[in-house]
Length: 480
Ligand code: NAD
Image 1 (cartoon, protein in one colour):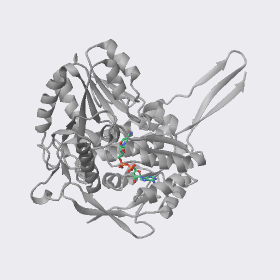
Image 2 (cartoon, rainbow, N blue to C red):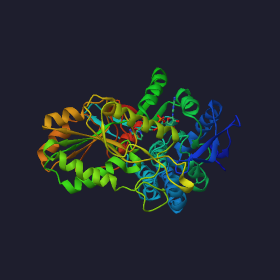
Image 3 (spheres, rainbow, N blue to C red):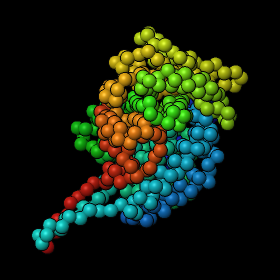
């Protein structure tokens, strides 16, 4: 069993309680390590360490902080194989995906914000001969960052990097389901030259550690990514304390396929946008809406491609999909498939757990699943499943496609497939979503605003939006 520790005030240490929680490998279903079962006492120590470290970290200036973060990025990159292995083992995702996406993106997040801060401008507003205003953006001290299990280090660094670059110190909580790479990174902080207390990582359960960060009076801002219900709970606690909140929540993303699209390109990408990371990406398309005239052709071709996907050992380069993240999550996804059947769905492929052999016999694998025959208002098309499950629905007109796309409480991402430029603008404007991709999926420029509308979240991350979130704007007006 590997023992993971908290990083508090530059020291790796167990929880004050002395208690531990097991960490499981989804592909084998076996525990391989343990994390500290921390509580509000550990969070309090972390907040105090962060408060103490703040003046010196801020005084280091943009360039000084940038250098430390760039060194950390370099150290992660130098240990790429170790990080990739850990991410795959902890999450169940294919090793190839962790190598192609997760860890390079974590490195890119650190580099992006380490350099963005150097170019972060302040605005000035001149009032003819009366006065000049300038905006002074200062860090507020301690930022709370809480992240989920689906893209563990990728989303963890997406939060801590802008917080640190802005001059704040951080108390962060990775998901208890996938703590391994955050721990691996914590072991590199000292070598990167990160002063003690600047980045604190407290492991443990959401309702204990996450709740303690949310309610701590010494943490004036919370950046959270996770489920909508958890986001609502965080808002309930944090709003009366007047904390700044950035909430990146769930989704039920539509993919709109018009008959004039590049069919081959659409098909290839739609298989990816449905099942990458076992469908456990907040940006995955889970409701595929297809123009009636190509519906039959799409269904046959799509189901053929999905049946050809290989589910297997995350370590094998042959595997397109690995295991889903936990036994509880597997049960949740299977329950949704059961509900879909109860609602009258035809399951065109998948729909079941896959039992492997040998060391993977207890692993949590689900066959990629395509569902047809359900209307927009049923639970299957309304609730986030967050697994390898998609529905397909036909539409007749552009107006109907937009209405179907917008017919959920969520509004994170959406995809449009068409070769008609005017339609792409028209539909993009009409979609209730924070992110619209046209003829592509998950093409990411880190400068763009990232976030959702409706129950998919509040606020935007990415680029200057993130740096603005992690600073307070003060207007200084000087009479000329
Ligand atoms: P989750 O909400 O269960 O947990 C997320 C984090 O919050 C974890 O670290 C957890 O320990 C913590 N937490 C749980 N209860 C808490 C509480 N009461 N107070 C404070 N923190 C608490 O989500 P998950 O299951 O880890 O992740 C899956 C969800 O995340 C999906 O809904 C998915 O759509 C969403 N997600 C959204 C985005 C986005 O950018 N919008 C990205 C990735 C994942």
